[in-house]
Amino acid sequence: MDANGRLIPAPNRFPSAAEGRGFKPLADYVHSKGLKFGIHIMRGIPRRAVDANLPVFESKAKAADIANKQSICPWNSDMYGVDLTREGAQDYYDSIAKLYASWGLDFIKADDMFGGGPNGDHSTEIEALRKALNKTGRPIVLSLSPGTRDATKAAFIASQAQMWRISNDLWDRWIDSKRQFANFTKWNPWVKPGNWPDDDMLLLGHIGIRAERGDPRMSLLTHDEQPTQMTLWSIARSPLRFDGHLPDNDEFTLNLITNDEVLAVNQKASASKELFTKSNQVAMPGSKAKVLAVFNIGDTDTEEIAIKWADLGLAGNCMVRDLWAKKDVGAVRDGQSFKVGPHAAALYRVTPQ
Image 1 (tube, rainbow, N blue to C red):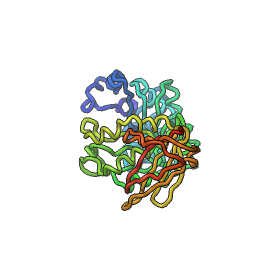
Image 2 (tube, one colour):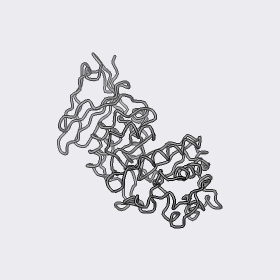
Image 3 (cartoon, rainbow, N blue to C red):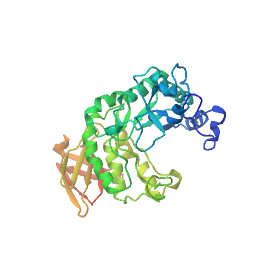
Image 4 (cartoon, one colour):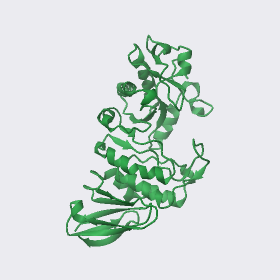
C-alpha cells in the first residue's frame, strides 16, 4: 500500500515493481508482445488505510472520512466500502484510476460490486469507478463481478461496464455448466458491441494450482462437456476467459481453444438466441451468421435434435458444415436431425445454396 492507501504490487512477487514502479514495467512488457494487461481489484478502500487514516491522494479527505465500516465483503474482509455521500469519496476512486492508467492498464475486473442482503447496494461505487476511469482518458475495459441475478438492473449495468458476471463462480462440474443455459437466455437481450454479459471462466486444462476449491488437476469436465462449454460460450458471445495454466495444455485442450471456426462464432455471430428447449434438447442459432448450436443436456441417452431450415429463416437446400470437425457435411434439403450424445454439443454453419 502506498502513502495514500492505494494497493500496489509487492516487489517480492513482482520484482519489476520495486522503487515505486508499480505494474508499468510488466504492462510495458505485455504490450510489447501485442497483448493487453489487466488486474483484479476489490471494491472499496483498504481497512489498513482507514485504520491509519491515510490522506487521500490530491484531496482534503482522509481515509477514515470516506469509509463505510458497515460495508465489508463477506468473502474477503480486507476492504471497507466507500460512502459516496461524503466529501472526498470520489477523490479516492479517482486516485486509484489515475494510478492504474499510469501503469498502462487495459482491463480491470472489479470484485464485490454486486451487493444485496446485508452487503447492500453498491451502485454508487460502480458509478464512482466508471466516472474515475473515464477521467483518466485511457480506454480501460471494466468488468464487474461476482454474478448478479437481477436483470432489472441490466440497463444501469450496461451503462457502466463493458462486461459483467451473470452467474455465481463456475467450477469444473457439469451441473455448473448446465445452469448457464438459462442464464444466457435471460441476459441475451443485452449482448451488443461494448456490452458482454460474462458467464465466468472456462475451466479447461490444468486448473486448481492455487485454487479456492480442490487440488491441482486437469479439468474434471469430460471430453464431451468441455466442447459443450466452449460451444455455449461461443454462440452466446460470452467473453472467453481461459482459466487453465497455458504451458501445461495437452493436445485436446489446445485444439479446444484454437479452433478458428468456433472462435469466429464467438467474435462475429450476431442475434444469437434460444430457438427451443425441449426436455434435454437445446438449439441456439445465430441468425445473421447462419450458425447453429445444438445441445443434449440429458445424462444418459443420445438425442436426435430435429431442425427445420425454415425455423432459421432459411429455405430449400442448405450446405451444412461441422465447425468443430472443420468438415462439410453436405447439402441438405429443408432441415436435418442431429445426433448428439449426453452432455455433448455440436456447432454448424448452415448456408443456403
